[in-house]
Length: 201
Image (cartoon, rainbow, N blue to C red; front, side, top):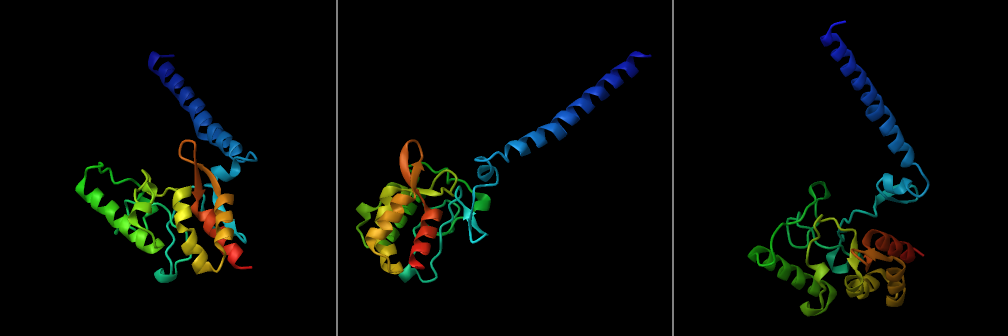
């Protein structure tokens, strides 16, 4: 048997072995691990369902848009750099940050616009608006907000849903989990769903 034939057969054997390992066994192994109880939800995108219908993901923050901005019943997420206006809804299909530095004039102007708009929406002074309310995350689709930003929105949400402020604060506390590195944060999607469910009673 010639040297070329030997090398060709050796290469074919390697190809077949790695095709089976990486093209069959590895995907099957990953799929089986993804079905382990406790991991399945994460593997499937942490989809949140209501009455059997998917309403979003607890890992992706999509800012809700109120039909009537004057009677806005929703908690809002952090702003997105992909939005067409300072507080507009971002596009998760092209998620990402602005990559603008702290001294960029456009970023400074956008932050001030956001601060003024949020202050007006919540009926507070611009100085009371927390930093995460006016700065976009690196992904632009951060699902969580700080407890301070949630607290700022409580009075408006209570007023526009008919719930008491105490009840809304309770729902905020119940939806407060980890945020960033060791900081408490509030998942906006699950909080809005809890508010809607409480208001439906």
